[in-house]
Image 1: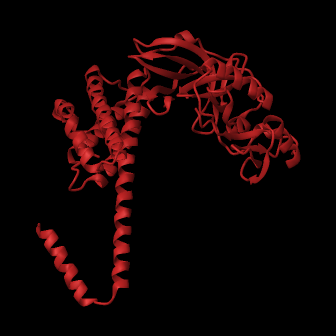
Image 2: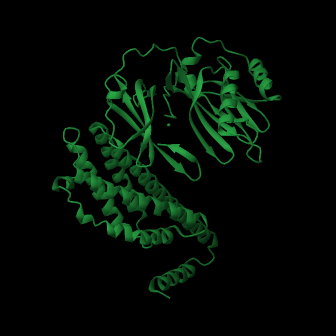
Image 3: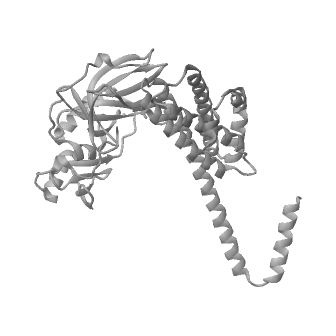
Length: 431
């Protein structure tokens, strides 16, 4: 029995002697202790997931740096890596306890952030050297390994393991990779120690509904019952798109008051074997969208996970893809029914647009050497400033990873880089 245990026993005996008969007070104390432990558990859980998410996002940005051929894009990405490292460092500090020593990891993250900051400061005027790029590649490999170790620790905890013990074991297993990358081999300049578009444009104004007439609840209900049979009133939804809500027994549907368009749909899927292909799901759901009044939609992203297909439809006109006008559809491959739909982006953003007349030569775009082009097409994408910009979308592979890269359609400046990843639980994702 250790000294700490002895002290705890003595303290309990003294307390019992002093407060004999005050069982209620002791019960209150026990309750507070339990609540405190739960709270501390929540703090560590939050720190763990923040670290895991940060490592994943950092790996993603570092890989985009490798495929980008524009210094401005690299600068922005490396600045974000530096910011991520600051956040990860804080989370690792919160995880640090007697069961898990995160000191070495924090040192690595701090040095990675410092190196990213140094590189971003020299860009875009001065390019990253081959030697610096090789160091960045090695750092990326370590981040990938760290993310894997953290993710596997979480999986073990889900099976009943202890987070800290499992995490420490994972990091110990990783030590071979970690130690192989001697941090001293990265000669950091002294100065650094000084310190796909699924969200679209949501400006909260449904442009597509502007000028359209409001429909009654009865009219909206008739439209829903024409698709699904019986529908029960289930209240209303307020917000930027005021809507009627109906219960469909095995799900619900939301219909806009203005125009009577389906805003959201959620149905239960039927269990069974996969009977339909991805292509059949696209054809069926496109026909369904036409029935709902969503015309000119084309599938621009499809991911299959088990017996379900997830399809992003975008409005296409004159060969131009308009990503702000996006509708997400979920289709059962058992009976090819649309069991989920989100049309908010389309309702917010779809308007008549002028044709894109001025264009640079897509063949003049400077691509990373070794990048294998699969498609080139014109697209309009949303920006973080709540505007739209016309681009060339160049899709292809670089070192066995698939990317979508967007360039200003006039200046040919690189605007955005997106990477396709394979998630075991969610299928293909674009980040």
